[in-house]
Every structure is written in structure tokens, then in C-alpha cells.
Image 1: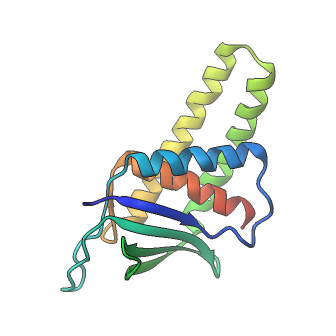
Image 2: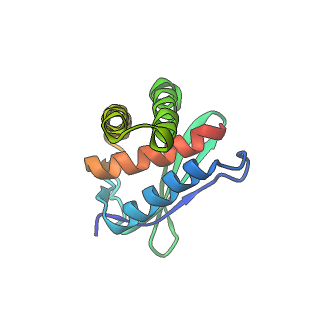
Length: 159
């Protein structure tokens, strides 16, 4: 089964999230576990263990770390990605999210919809960057990339 069965964020050293960020995190984690596509390709003549997988996400030494384990908890692989390609899109995403959260409280639906469309566009760009960075390391679909990107933003918020 090529999917994630458990996701864990190492956010122990991050400041407490705002209620909006905590909600984004909860929704992304719930949606990710409900439906995702995640597979490890064979690499360097090594066969990848079959899923489902337990995925740990953290930021260590200014790098995004994916700690992938089997469902039983045995190590499958770990890869480290530079945060540099994500910095601008994460910054843009949180800026538009802040505008969206404010708009929901004060603006008419038509303006909220316009901001939400922009937010989705930036979110799609983040998912595209993540998919490119994971090429050859993990195979994911677009919805999985979007949800993982949200979780990366949550980690990056405090990092």
C-alpha cells in the first residue's frame, strides 16, 4: 500500500501556533491521513520497503527532514531537503493566509473568494516545489504534495 498511515511533526522547539495555524495543521493532517499517495521508489539498487509509511517531518540544521518508517516503525529511509527553495513561497503563503484570515472576519464573500483563489495559487506553487524536491526520493500525487506543503509551512512558521 503506497500511502502514509501516520504523520508526525517535530514542533517541540517552535513557538506556540496561532489558532489559525493550529487549524491549518489539524485539517492538513486529517486530510492527509484520510487520502494520500506516497511511495518510495527503488534507489541505488536498493529495494524500498513497502508501505504504508509513518512519516516524521522536522527541521534540523536549517534542513527539512523526512524520516520515513514502515508501519511497524522500522527505518525505511531519511532524506534532507534544503529549505531555500521553500522560503519565498512559504513567506508568500503565510502573508496571503493572514490576509484571508482577516478577510473572513471583515469582508464580503466576493472579496474573500478572490483572496482564497490567490491563496490556492500560492499553495499549488508550494506543492509543485515540494514535488520537484522529492523527485527520485518519494512519489506523491498533487493532493498529498499540497497537504505536506501545509505541514512544512507550519514547521517553517517557527523555524
